[in-house]
Length: 359
Image 1: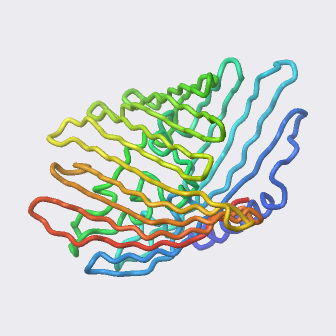
Image 2: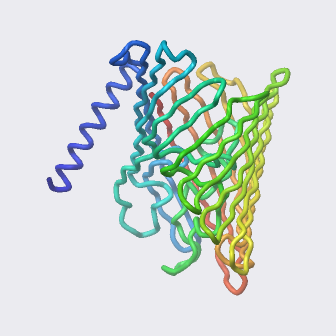
Image 3: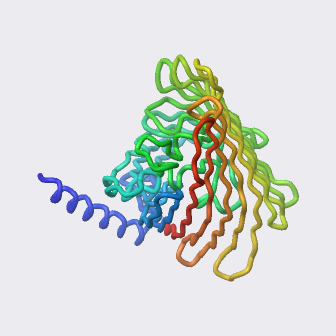
């Protein structure tokens, strides 16, 4: 089958899958006590960027929460009360991914990302064991965020324009080279165990290989309408890299919220990568369709890829929730700067606006 036929077939399959998901989210399983869930989202945006030499508009898939579809099933055998067995398949679809577009270059190739293909066994008393392609235990520990603006601004600030370069040379550093929140080990083939929740605390550990493993501690609580979410983790990426990160987010009952994150690596080299992130936001009930969220954030990154590098980013963002159509409409203005000894770069200014439609 040639590539054009394959793409048409894949597009048709995705459309049929999405139509079915939109029509009915929960379906009866093939056996009693079985539940099947289908979900998905489309997250499209326009991105403008100017680095002082180049300026360009892009149509992108927002890499903070890329477009995807998923299918999961749970089976609760009556003879084993309390146990749930199940699995899921989730595929991501990236057409002109916002982290891959480049100045004066061809559009990135369309990508299908096998996000999750895993099976699990869960019990409220014994915890959960999962195996297959899925989240490592530390994934997300640098990204606890109660601001309501995660879709357009969170601690991994490079998602919006990661491949855009400072300066005008093909070997100039890109945004993704000098910004990193060190958020754990992401997704991989692994074995993972999560303890039962105890007073809001959960401990997780996973192993993906000989030198690829991690552990995380998470905590969630609510006091008199105020919410707090936090997480910390350590990870071994290979024999030469130890990684750590953590984050905390506080949402006050009045809507005021604060988020902070930090991370770094111990590497066998002459530099020490570190990152710090902070955000202040406000959730408001201005419209009947859903909550309005505004925020401002700041990211400071040191020696991500080279000694003595300092990179900073700040942004102002707005996210409007539209509950009747399960959507978020968002806009942001973000600035990136790089201070590298012996080199001089203009800042990169970006503007992004888009919609995330879930079903």
